[in-house]
Image 1 (cartoon, rainbow, N blue to C red):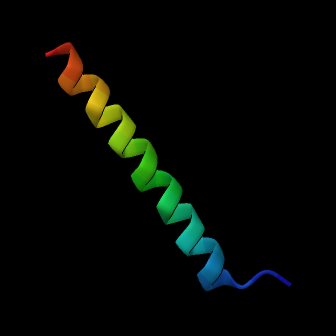
Image 2 (image 1 turned 180 degrees about the vertical axis):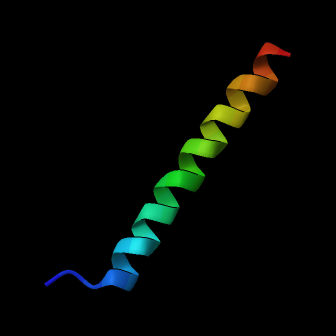
Image 3 (image 1 turned 90 degrees about the vertical axis):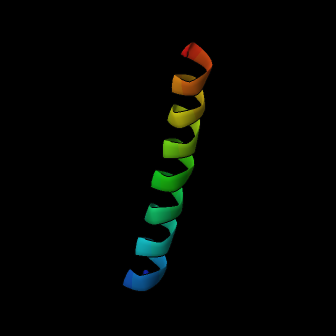
Length: 30
């Protein structure tokens, strides 16, 4: 059984990491 809190934490980590990558790409373009 997967813990919902653990799943949400992992999901949040993925979103933040992807947001960081996108932010870097945008800054690089500018």
